Length: 414
Image (cartoon, rainbow, N blue to C red; front, side, top):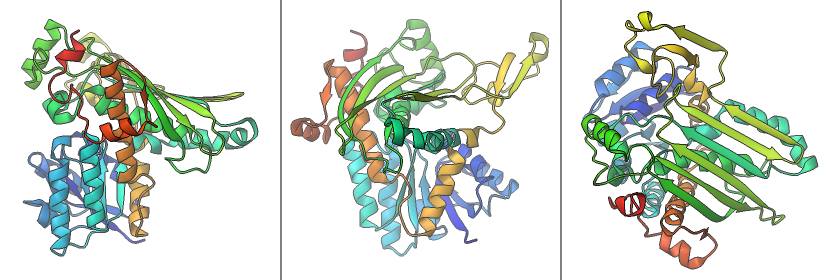
């Protein structure tokens, strides 16, 4: 089997998750990392776990010279500059087989279009990393229901919720650097997986045409004085001045271009789920059938009493974003596989070795960015956004939400 040599830009939380997932991926190895912090730790982890002869490189150009594929896992605000450096390295002779970008592709439609343009300039296949579409349980459910969809009709309503207690690092909380709040951070997951679930069997990920978006954004917990102080002390972000939403919900309507049937994707996301940890709820409803996924359903539970809990230091040892290390804990033995990281890495490996885009490419990431920005626009205007309106399409090309501009108080504190 041919082996693909991966290079990571970024060594933060998601990079570590991908490194864990690589343990289960054949034909791919981590050979290099470039990051402003955490690079030595990630490289040591890769070597200790036989993921590859991972070295720390001093810049993007050197990384590109020594790998086949570069995965951009750095913060949202740095994406365009980093990909520009990758393209320059390719022009200077780096022989890359592909580019990966972690979700969301960009903070705005304009940034996303720039990234697509850059990848095209370098003539490189791309992979947009949206792990939830690669969840094994989703694939199994859709395969099981494929005959029913052909007989009874397609799934008509998909609902997705992702919630946890909040991000790990300050830049995630800062709307001017992240591109918004929970809608930008996690709404991209929920909108994408719902769109994917609604597509009829055998159709490409963008088969259904987006028709409209209606959404709300709110600041329910982290705008309260007590929690604003916590956030300022812990993350250095002041929600009294530049708040972002900690709750978002909405509905995207899609049209089947072959039958004109309308179907709905409902999304809900929050940074205020103070229970076991990260929770994914995904379901699909069709005529006479349904499926439902709850990531907190696990065959393993552990109980830790108060006295014993004094010895437990890492609350996230049980589950991503866990807020407690005592009581009855839900534990997933293999989160990286459960959430789809393993399968998306394997999909990218297979695609790049074949010289083509992954299942989800950067053009797809651009479309998800467009839907998220339309949701922000809907929340600002408190009306449904018609995605078929040429004027709206043009407006979204240059739109930056008030929240992303640092003017969230105008819409969240009304």
